[in-house]
Amino acid sequence: MSTKELTIAINGYKSPELLRLCLQSVFRHINQNEIDYEVLVTDSATEENTEMLMREEFPTVRFFPFRENTGFKTMVNTSLQEARGQYIFLINSDIILTQFVVSKMLNFLKTHPDIGILSPKQLNFNGTLQPSCFHFYRPLTILYRRTWFGKFSFARHHLNWFVMTDYDKLEPRAVDWVMGSAMFVTKKAVERVGMMDQRFFMYMEDVDWCRRFWEQGFKVVYYPEVFVYHYHGKGSAKGGLFGSLFFNPLTWYHIKSAAQYFWKYWGKSLPHIENV
Image (tube, rainbow, N blue to C red; front, side, top):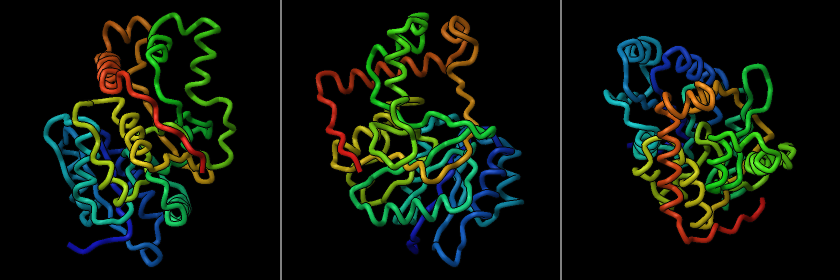
């Protein structure tokens, strides 16, 4: 198996239209003559139209379909196992790359070997900033985000802290954790840290992974000098406060994963966060 400099690893789930746009942005903005790269796609609960898309429009892309809904961590772990690149850019299929994002992030990682995860700024399609770097969760964070307590000023203060509103997002900065929708990692760091924890079916796996990178001596860095577009559906928040709690299964996946996360780290100190 020949090695590559870079693997672009895309994780999809029942979104062939977005997957097409994502792949088109990859091939539009990465120059094969400048970067020796490959592209692979993992897809959960794969449908016929997605298979047809990959077969007819992107036959050179390595495609790993799953018949069942395997969860985010299985797609990421499959990508990590199959990647031939020394560097791996893990993105969701609802990410659209922009010019220079890959080359600049790759060069930044090469010159900063102490970084294990590098994450770009993420924008909504209307150009507004999307929160994608955070402080580590506390139990109160879940309570305030999921209940009417979040309407009080003390809760809003805590949630502003959680999403790092005091950080202007202009210069690269080490952060506790970054959203798993766009993570640039090094294979060397992954080999030391390990794969995503299989205990998390959906949600919190990116939080846990970032924490483990910090525990193994690798920095997690938000890199706002480049940006991607992200069609972020926020599925666990749909239905409003009471509708999501009683009728949205994604809300309960989030709550269950949060409970697993807090149990896993019960009594353990947070890792030391050192800036770039």
